[in-house]
Amino acid sequence: MLLKRLLEPIARWESRLAARWVSSAHARLLAVQWGLKPWPEHFDHRIDLFHQWIRTRNPTWVERGVFSLLALKGGPVLELSCGDGFNARNFYSLRAASVIACDIDSRAIVTARRHNRADNLQYVVADIRTDMPQGEFDNVVWDFAFPLTRYFKPAEIERILAQIKRRLAGRGGILSGYTEAETGAVDGDAYQFRCMADLQRFLRGHFANVTVFETRAPQRHNMYFWASDATVPFQEGWHAALVVAGGSVEPGRRTEGSCQGTPPDEAWRSGGG
Image 1: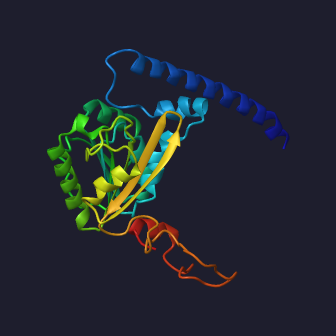
Image 2: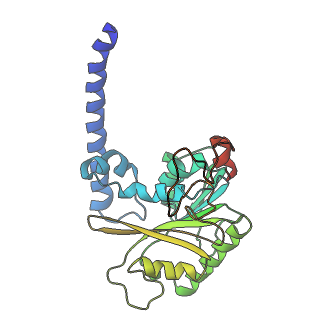
Image 3: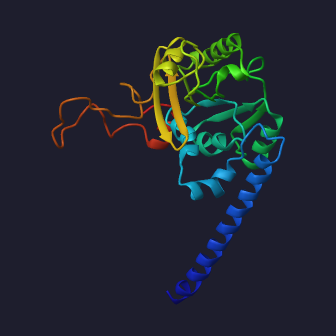
């Protein structure tokens, strides 16, 4: 007891000092990377983790990983345009049998391999228009750039979505991802998304089941989606949710759910419950 009373204040002082130094170091990294040109094609999310999150109290940067994590079924995952690999490692790799994460930017892949490695995670330099990694996947994650037509021609967008569907079809897989609402979008442009309805309309042209939802933060209007020809999260029949719609349930009465099933560790590995 006495030893703990002596050591804990020292450990607290050391951790405060380290946290301040790490935060200031990442503030300097931010200033160098984004204050001086040329700007990088990807963002190092350790800057968010160690500096910006505490300073701004804004959790937007983790939403992409969290919401796509909810859609994981436990099998192989393909992440497109993975950037620095932060989400691939820290959100997807623990809940997936394997992860292939790709980006066209070779510098992003260097950062990912250096800072976000995992045993079941492979990083690949690939142009998803012409060289999307092959295979069958339970999940494809695509946090796509906006506006889409700045980076892809309409025919390329359609080809990318066709390739995604081909990789999901054999396993009844789910496409999940994120984009931002475009305040200057042109009305009637199928590849610009002013609101959830625009994004849902675009995805429903390719998938039978689509859920779109949004969050708002200072200067950000974020839109997230799950799309599949099979069940998407929180639909009836989704293995990881028990939904009671309408009416009431008597206390103690057993509903459609059951506590006697696959142990949790096996459930998320197998994609079932």
